[in-house]
Length: 100
Image (cartoon, rainbow, N blue to C red; front, side):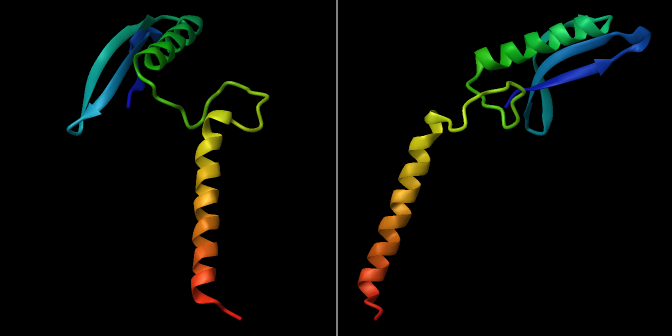
């Protein structure tokens, strides 16, 4: 899993890096750049996020993108199969016990 690292230096400059953790150590995957003001820092963070998105198929738990979708169709199949499995399990258990 790739993460974004911001290293603050003197004179208000910030270095942006993409890294991963292997054997309890940080391994720098890519150095994105150094920023001297807030706008450059935001641009480099955007570039780092784009790099992570393009190089891996990593999904974010908390995504900043706003969506009008209430139901995500790509995850719907998993939920339906789980509910079907649960229904089958309960009905077969009930039929095998024949509780009256």
